[in-house]
Picture (cartoon, rainbow, N blue to C red):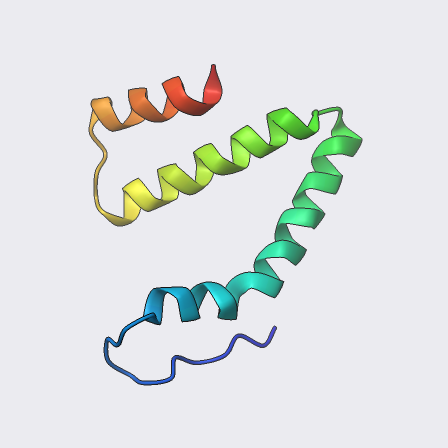
Length: 81
């Protein structure tokens, strides 16, 4: 795994985008592997995509310590129904 470091150790314009670029190849590799395994297990592409998005949102909510019931309900409403 070779993820590039930020251009500077502190905040700068486009740092978030630079992080996306740095993670892109590894992210795609991981998601492709997960999607392939899900397909082999019998999950559709749509189901897998919705689950991955829901998990990413739940991860983001966890990082913000947002564990409220409203947050969980909204994630379920958007992606798990």
